[in-house]
Structure formats: structure tokens, C-alpha cells
Image 1 (cartoon, rainbow, N blue to C red):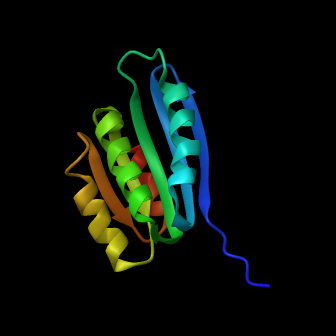
Image 2: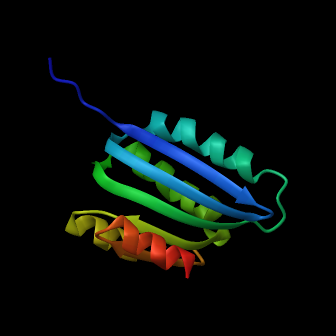
Image 3: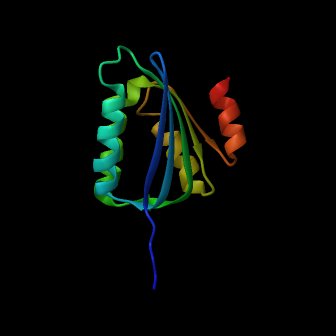
Length: 126
């Protein structure tokens, strides 16, 4: 039996109006994955004046997005992009590094690519 794993794991910590968001993306993300995660993020941020978000995205098991999911990701960036201070993307593929550079075009904060999680966490905590 061939099982294909995909999806997003999310963790959200809040201290006043500062948020730490951790995401782990697995496999090829789908529109349905975003239908689950976007309401969770929207709910966490609801009613917070000027939320500030630092995010750690673990893409070491990410294979990509379906076309509609890529659109969902773009819309999420447009909706919440001004709320991100730093996004650290941990990956192991060259296209992920390029994606991090392109992602910085759509948010007001910094986006940086890392090959190790400890390096990413150190940068987020600076």
C-alpha cells in the first residue's frame, strides 16, 4: 500500500500582541489544507490590534503546492503580510531558497532561508 502524506501542522503562541507561529509542511499542499489553516490563523489574530508575527516554517518535507493551494498561499500573504516581522524558512531544496526570496516581496518583514532549524530559531530570537 502506497500512502502519500500531506498537510500542515501549526503551532501558535501569543504574548500580548506578539505571536510565534510554527508550521511544518508535508508533501504537496492542497486547497483543503489552506481551508483548515487560514481560519485558525484568522481566529488567533481576531481582535488583536497591530499583531506582530514571527514564523518558523519547516519545509524539509514539503514537495510543493497544487495550483489552487499556491493561490491560497499568495492570498494569505496579501491578507496578513503586513503583520509579519520575520519568517524563517527551513528547507533542503534550492527552490525553497528562491521561494523565500520571492516571499519577501509580499510581506513587510524579513524572510530568510535556512538549512538548519537551530540557525533559524537563533535568527528569529535576535
